[in-house]
Length: 221
Image (cartoon, rainbow, N blue to C red; front, top):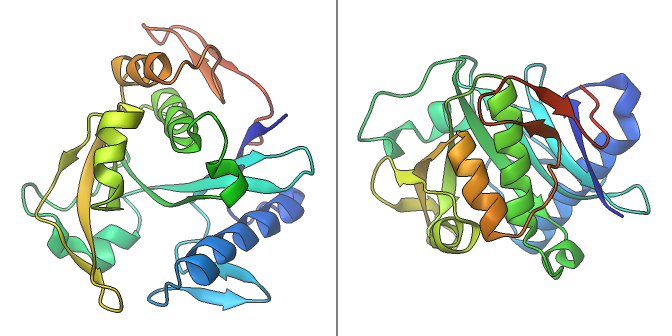
């Protein structure tokens, strides 16, 4: 049975889990997708300059204690990828700089996890919203491919909006992406849970009025 964990960057008590996550990122972004821009690879692991104190990871750990899905969250009040390298993608509002707006990035899953009957993307998003609600986050922003954007809306059920036009992010394959803004609310979480038939929370059980927040499963934070 897979379970979700919340881990801080550079947590010395979670070295093995962090190594497994960085290896998964290498497998997906470097080996499978063949990204080159912004990646730092060493010993079959992928890092970048934003894997630092202040970043938080949501990871899913399988029965073999290997990370098979993950994403990275960090507040826009600190230097972040979209703000520093892709700010020209944000056209419809000021560049976010707030503890209430966080960036979600490096979202990926193993091929086996992607073949599962339940959308791993939806699971990661639900867990991210649970985290956001418990930390008074109003929205997430991300750089998201034009291929994934309609999946987020139609399949997952996240009512995200574009902050600008789609533009090329990878000149090697002419891949285009949007800067997106994603709502963090109980209503958004409820829609995603219902649409994807999630009967239990992944990280935090949050009631409608945010009066009670209960940690569930394995939360290392």
